Length: 80
Image (cartoon, rainbow, N blue to C red; front, side, top):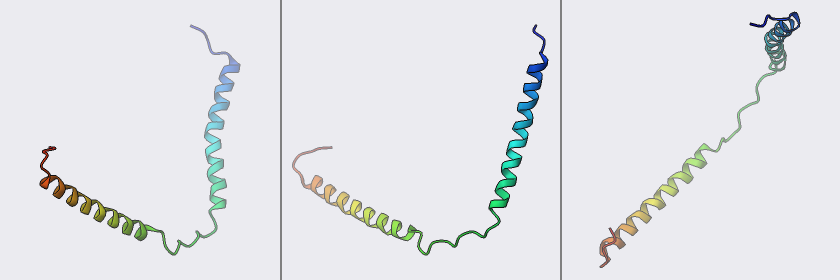
């Protein structure tokens, strides 16, 4: 079994120290940048527009389904 050499032990200790100190320094820097108030929300986020488009598409799908079912029911060919 190989023994730990002092250089390897120092390298591991240095990596642990950097791994602990780096996130702490990033958190301190982020705290300074977040001191300003947040921006106001947009006047319209577009969800009502998206919901209106979704309702129109669902209505089109419902009408097409009804028309295709009627055409299939009156067809002399038995497709399904």
